[in-house]
Length: 294
Image 1 (cartoon, rainbow, N blue to C red):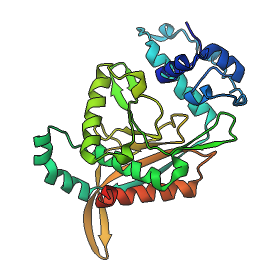
Image 2 (cartoon, rainbow, N blue to C red):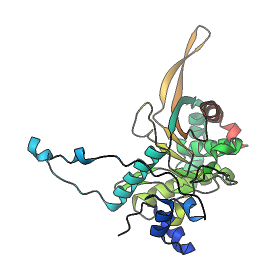
Image 3 (cartoon, helix red, strand yellow):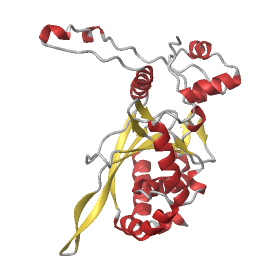
Image 4 (cartoon, rainbow, N blue to C red):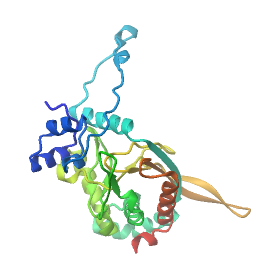
């Protein structure tokens, strides 16, 4: 069994290119390989310091009754990738919120059409549409950093990853060319990809290559969190449950539904001011969805 950590899409790409994953990892001096590592002669990145976890090896049964549950291979790979990303990337999270009055009104207005089309028009479809527009407006967010940290790869496409919580672990299928798709098509793809992810029917070619990922906890709850950047992406957008916030118009209080937005980003490429501008622009699109439809 391979000891190299690589996503299914990365392994499929390596197979296409005839690259030996184990050999490539040895050349780079790493145990984690991404798709960008298969594109030729990047210099080896500095090896991550290995933590001493010997003190974790505790006989828990000595303190009371326990049971054991084996981690699936899928879960082990995901855990290793997250640990590597968190250890190697200097991540910062910017928190903001956006008004969703107009989006919710539009969803109600379009409900009969959605039923006629057989499409579930969720708020997430609007977030995908808005994020795709924002990535075109801020191209440095739609980029990846080379493994040696010397080159920024700017992408002339916008693919949005959708994190899906499944019984067998987190999966991130990708909506390709989201900036060119209509709202109805995005909504239909979200439903399709999420359903097939639950049944493990998402193919390797439908994962990987995202410009940025959205992880949405709105259906569960929370007021904010700090999602971990999914390399080689440079940022990830977290969304939690919409809450009613009191906004003051002069001396008059007004209840406004607001959705929390949490943008974690790679500080090697993106600075705090850029992140604030990006999220502010994104929040403006969400508050006025007509702007994202143009």
